[in-house]
Image (cartoon, rainbow over all chains, first blue to last red):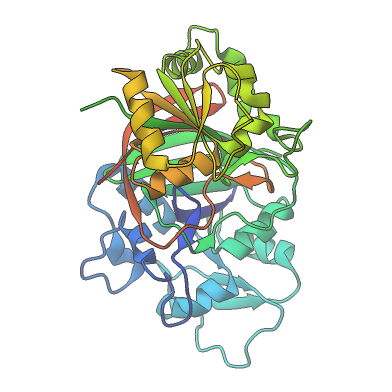
Length: 197
Length: 189
């Protein structure tokens, strides 16, 4: 069955970007430090970022094997929707209040009738494969709505001090997780949690 | 290398070390005790017992004032009568802390005194405030984070906003206990 998997690189102090992230500086100041588990040399499209160590390759390849992408509007806009194709020509679903009038990307689908419907559509389109989730705000919406199945954190050994937190603005209600896998690569710890429901 | 100054803190995956509204009478915040469940195994033979025993084998303690007061000053003895150095901005000369505790207003002095007191044993650090002050002063050597698989959603964060200088770490040990992952990081300098 298709699962919704959040995959994010996070500093030990909980940040996913440096401070001052915007359209021209999507990672924020110094935020590219968190992407260093990927191969950033000569990377033009997402598939080029494949890391060179085996533990990180496992995690990266899983992402590339997903059957659909669900991304927050902000993350998608900042990333230019990855040129219209995140990986392998799979559809990209974007929950939003108002779809833009002009959508040049054939694979990008804006969903305006709620996060639940968006997840449902993404799972249906994934053809039995998992759905890859990007974006902190959308992740929180999915958590609150009980829609998130798996949290993959690439825990980076650095304190970056300021920026955008991955987990912020959740309800003060405990969400229990189960650690189901740990992979240690050079300079990164991959933690996979299943969300208990 | 001399024995390290090492932070010991239990933290949820979303970065909290206590639930919301931590105060006297509710020291761990609302439902904040969740991140300490692994300590139920503290006297057991497993990983959690090992990590607990290592912590109790430290030779001195550095604490923040807030943690110290919330903990009722540990009645003057945190563990085995080791000296307790309490970081504070100011204190009243008439306020003599109990037992082995003493107030310190200078972070580097406190760190130096704690290292000396601990000898060849590690120094334990407790509390978010003390951790930040020591980090800022370049005196924190290691972080032992007991990472607990839960999202608390609210509470007191271990790492608040700092300046934007990155502090690089190196993961030097990882132990899987029941209901917790013990991650030991060394602060790179």
